[in-house]
Image (cartoon, rainbow, N blue to C red; front, side, top):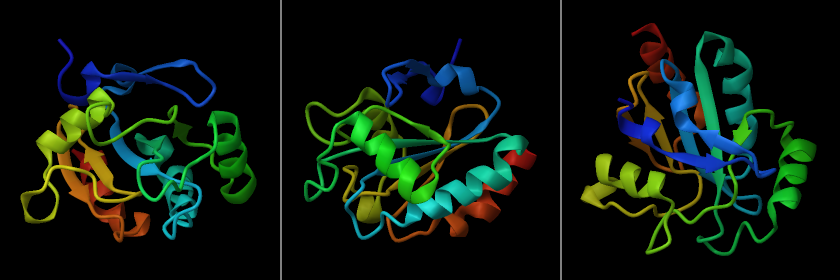
Length: 162
């Protein structure tokens, strides 16, 4: 039986099914993203991690979200074009989702319950909050938007070696 994040699925930006169970045995980095945010340049760092570590078993999934300052107003085709054009994004991108509230994606309901934020808060506070997931589907840690993708490399490599 699948455990942890492997119980969840979503759709890609182009509407294709995306079951997280397809990534059992891989290290996942799950990030809520936005195209018009001060942290948007982190797409470059995420892409660099993808380029360097995907063959070793890292899977990055971006989840566009418009809940913070309306910084992801576009539809899925616009989001995909922006990411490709400006950052060469080739890692997986989910359909646009909510990460907080009554309509939060079930994956984010799970993630925020499993890994609390600063001072024990559960809700996502801003774009580019990151969740690092072990190969067995368990949440390893949650990182603030200010934590750069490069700062996660040592922990990712540690999990890849497990």
